[in-house]
Image (cartoon, rainbow, N blue to C red; front, side):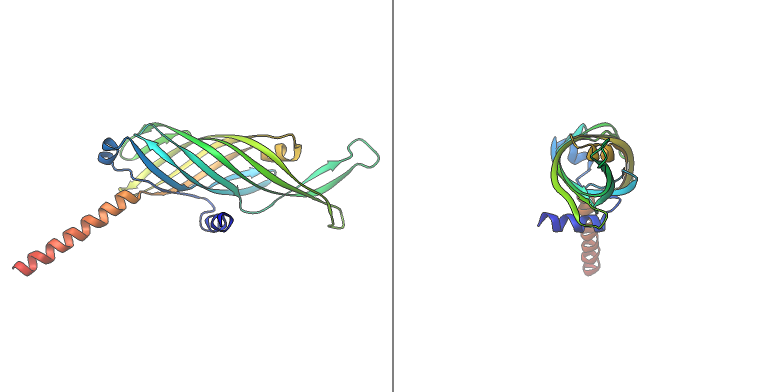
Length: 226
């Protein structure tokens, strides 16, 4: 089920981080902790490919100081590369490889500056996952197939601008460092990332709709009274 949901997210949000959270200042002052949820997308260079990495994040936000939670991530399509086998021997050969991966992560996001329009933050992601590596002979038959664990650290800086009371945009850049004893994974995954976001503040949107409905009903009541 998660894989199906994840594929839908990748189809709909290849570049976008779509956030659902309440950003009302009055609400934030009254409630120190609140729930946050987002489709978390970013683009990254993996090997020589520009890849979309998408996922889901769930967590909490404490006042206007930080957000924390867990996330689930993966690439939108297999990654293609190559690796040398039997190096420095007469049997040395370079084979084409395909890599599928997914990982779960702890997410911590300090908020350094926030006002009614702007937010500056530094998302930090510490993840663990598995990568399925498949290498092919020149005739396209499978030479080897196995899964390798890996861990990663991803740090980025983001800026968001709230252009409407209930919607905003954002962008960011960062770098991902991967820890693995498999050189193919390490060589291809250590890379810069860049992020583009569209955020919808559901709480503000709901309150705005409710205010409009109340105002409309009040006008109708006045017209009937007249």
